[in-house]
Image 1 (cartoon, rainbow, N blue to C red):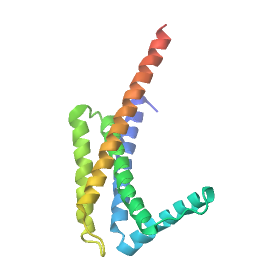
Image 2: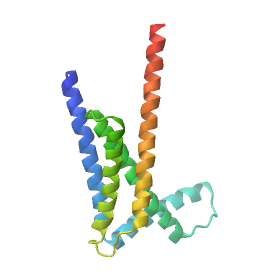
Image 3: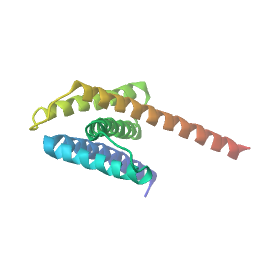
Amino acid sequence: MNKTRRRKLLILLSWVAVILWMAFIFYLSSQVVDQSRMLSEGITNAGIGAVEKVAPGLHFDLTKLNILVRKNAHFFAFLALSILVINAGRRSGLKGLRWFLLGLGFCILYAISDEIHQLFVPGRGAQVLDVLIDSAGVFVGSIIYKSASLLRARWRHSDIASRIK
């Protein structure tokens, strides 16, 4: 496979990953309240089971822990989305602060649309707090991506420098 074809394939795959992740978020937001609760309680119970194997006898407030799991799901779903969006844009040749801010804005607008979507799902509703948590995930994801890019550039530069010597 030649370099141009490989680059185009990577661009396409990057944007497909963005679309699939957005569809996954949409799917989770489409679950009625009972389905959503069962999913998060299942994850909470699995986590409790794992912790109890290591530290038996600990007691957990299932309700509070389940809320923590649900809010962390928001955070990490949008952290991943921001990384995917910024990566897809970078692979497409979009660079600089302008793209970075557009990518963040896109993810935050999707977070807002996700909450609006939940207004139409039985038992669900829109919460400003969830948009704030999603946005925090977007910012942290973008910082992780930018930091990893800087480290990668520094590593490449040092690798090149060591080859010259």
